[in-house]
Image 1: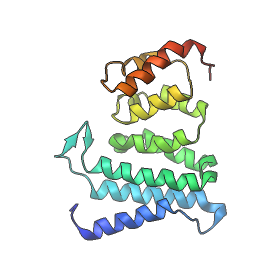
Image 2: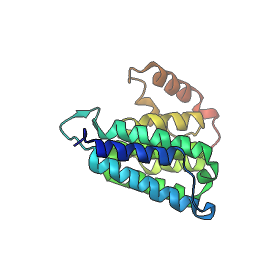
Image 3: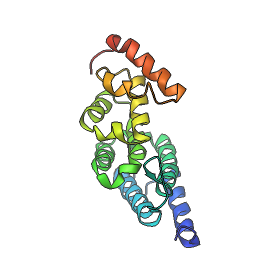
Image 4: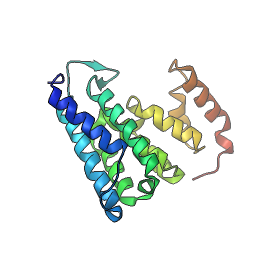
Length: 186
C-alpha cells in the first residue's frame, strides 16, 4: 500500500497545500486550515499504518510521514502567523493532543502549539496531559518548551532526561533543574 504512487502523489499534494497555505477567504482561514490539516492527518493515518514495523514506540511509517507533514505545516504557519493567534486553531490542536488515536504522533500537534509562545498554554499542557511526558518525541518537545519558557514546577519530569544519554537533553535538564527556583510562576 505504501508504494502505491496514487497515495504518494496525494500526500505530496497535501504537503504543498499546507506548506504554501493560502486561504480562499481570509475571514475563514482558520476553519480552512483546520479542515486541510484534519484531512491530511486522516490521510496519513489511513494510508501509512505499518504495525509490524515499530521503532521507539512509534509506527515506523506513520511517525516519519506525520513528522514530515507537520514540519511543512509549521512552515506554513510561519508564513500565516495570524493562524497562531486563532482560538479555533489552538483548540483544534489541543483536541488532537487529547486523542489517543494520535498517540505516536502527538509531538506533531504539540509543535505548532509551542510556536504560539504562550507560557500559560504550555504550562497547562505540561500539567494536564501527563501522557505527553511518556510519549517518545512529544516529551522532548515539551521538555524543550518548558525549559526555554522557564516554566517552574516540572522538576520530576526534567529528571527523567538526566539519564537519557542524549547530551543536549541532559544539558537542558541540568540547566532547568539548577535554575528552576529563579523562574517566575505562570
